[in-house]
Image 1: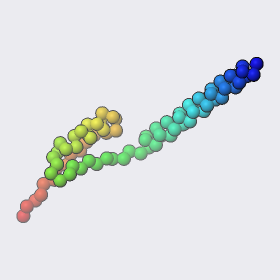
Image 2: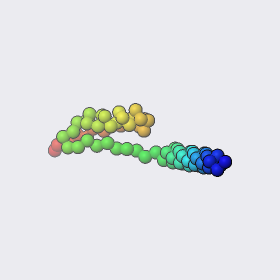
Image 3: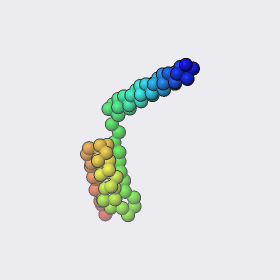
Length: 82
């Protein structure tokens, strides 16, 4: 009888912990989704000295594939010689 009561108590505790953990994860997910919908922060990629227009292609492609980027803008800067 003691073993049965112990087993039932352990099952109730485990079920309670699983339920609490599940609820907390849902709250964190909901908070994260709300924050990401409210704020859109642009990300700028600059290649280093001696880099080319294609130096950042992998990072930009990966950002687009992961759904973090939807558009890109490439700006070419030319030095005006006097």
